[in-house]
Amino acid sequence: MPIYLAVAQMLIAVALVAVVLLQVKGGGLGGIFGQPDGVYRTRRGIEKTLFRLTIVLAIVFVSLAMITVATS
Figure 1 (cartoon, rainbow, N blue to C red):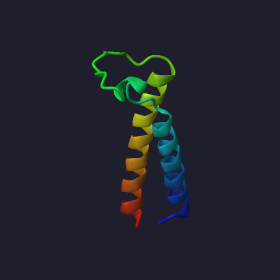
Figure 2 (cartoon, rainbow, N blue to C red):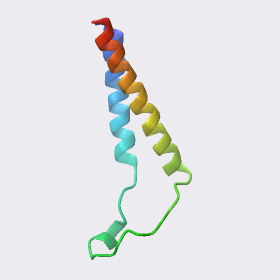
Figure 3 (cartoon, helix red, strand yellow):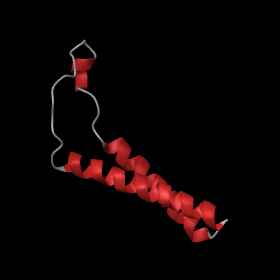
């Protein structure tokens, strides 16, 4: 396995974890007290960018994993 593929996969994994942790989930403090999370919201601005970046990074990560397996 080429070392550059392993390094690239590790960097993509760290970036993917960071992007997932930056995303806002849940309804805030209202969920603690039983408030339903039934409000429909659209993703705007940075939320939309983070969501799309998560999808792209996941696809790149899986692609790199398949390439790594194929070359070893």
